[in-house]
Image (cartoon, rainbow, N blue to C red):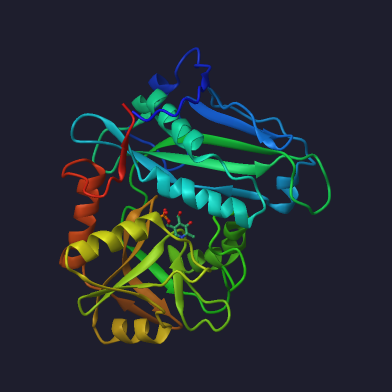
Length: 356
Ligand SMILES: Cc1ncc(COP(=O)(O)O)c(C=O)c1O
């Protein structure tokens, strides 16, 4: 158990909604556990955190966040482990990223010890919401938003920090079809691509919808200046296995520094797999897919963990990649990550934070 001396007041629900919830049939992001953590930033300081029943917020229509999108968020997961316990996967990495996002968006950083305590307390309180079964986890959503009642573009003086959790199962039921996007952009050098801020996602909705209308699950974003280099895919970082080398775009300020990406790179290197983090050109990816040198491609992110890519479209062409069962290297890394997360093998990296 992690303690920092921070006391979190807890107001429990009078009656849990768990018994009314069909846990065998949960849609990702639609079911919410009983409690949430709330902590306000006012008069230049963080107030005491409190865990309260999950419920609606009261907001002024003039709240800054509703107009100018000064808001950031995170996504991480807790898993049931083989010893019968529950652990949160790499929360310190998400806390650090949230505070980098806060800095970029002119928002107050959240004290790391309070943040970690809050995550552990909240997951402990609602751990019965964690479904049983292979793909099951408790998705944890921390977010921070500008709460000043003010019309005018400026950093807010007041903020609200909230964490809630959702029981979830798998994200994609099948390998995905993706399209390399060469018209619209998600991010630009000097922009906010590296921050996990709301506006990045709103701006991607329209191009993603155009892709979905054509039957693609996701886009592969390319660089905002030339559209000649691969960046990431939807809410995932992207990896390609080209002739036995695992290749992923380097972190250049425009893509999100994914925790899953980092975990996969670490595991792959330790498994002796050749890994390259560098600029990845569209031309190289398309040519490898076209002439059968691409053995697999997958997205990596907390929600889906690893989403195997079945086909990649570029312009009028669409390339089919090898069947998932044949993807030896991707499957090897995915299996190892899963075994560590679920405590099936020892965690050599100190990634799991137990909550019980
Ligand atoms: C744009 C974007 N890229 C990549 C990722 C993957 O990051 P992580 O592995 O930390 O979930 C996410 C999800 O958080 C994302 O929203």
